[in-house]
Image (cartoon, rainbow, N blue to C red; front, side, top):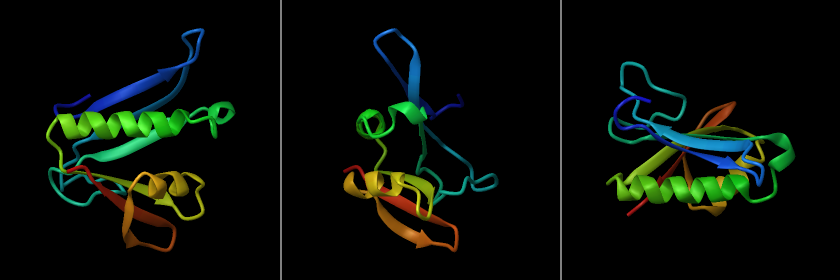
Length: 112
């Protein structure tokens, strides 16, 4: 991780990693797909397929939002492909589309 980055890992009862979520502080000179501005961390999340639709992603997302808020961030951004099931999760957790492309949407959540 670089300064300003943070992340979480979800594990099952046996201690196996089943998902992870993190945010990165990306510079304007090397932005990610969900870049919205300097100082706005970009969220990345992944859950093993067998654990999807079991609340793992939602829990990771909520905890990461809490962490970002505690670290003083006002917003989080992300990029999601159109039609990706996760877009429904993001909307239900307060993310709103700020930019819609042909393939991807950029979404932002206000944390304060």
